[in-house]
Image (cartoon, rainbow, N blue to C red; front, top):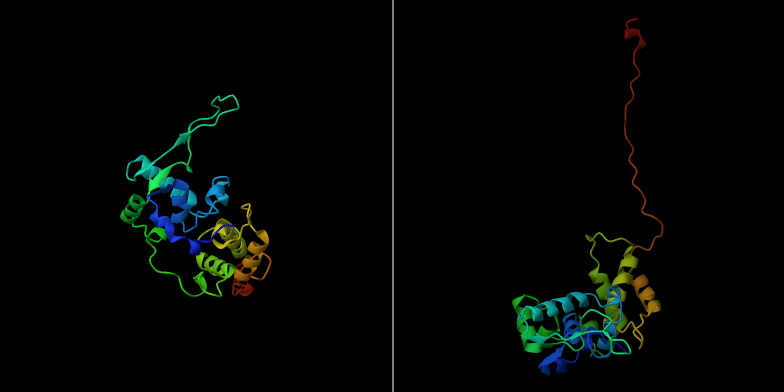
Length: 222
């Protein structure tokens, strides 16, 4: 089962080096255990929100020597051992130094992530709470994430459900095979939805107050 971001083990901080995949997941507050072995098999639009950007930033940092790490290049081979692909980075075998990553993130001003977290979340967001409910935490964060100023197609419910799909691993909304629980997504979408009336938005109508004056025929010269 995938673990949500609130249950990240602090033992990750004891490692000197971690894989690029693990580092990217931790940057977006997702416990790598149970997720790292699947995430690269998903289409980019199904990966956790921010994961691709985090991975790209880490790879770029290692490539420019701003980060201490190692990028492992690999190729695909057929059964006879012949190369049948262009070289690509194997993110699972590529590594980054944890302390170097912390310092680099700090220099970029990106400190709102696991590597800098010192305070535990409280109340319904705290997984240690005896009444902690992952779906409740997911619903609240999905509702809070909605940006009224953002021009995005779809109804509020559809946009919230998209956010929930992108963040499904964080809240355990996937099964052991990594498939998203669409039933749960739909239920949470209904809970968060405030636009409950169906149909297209009603167009506003305006009434013009126009005074029509009939001409005085006696004043017309003919």
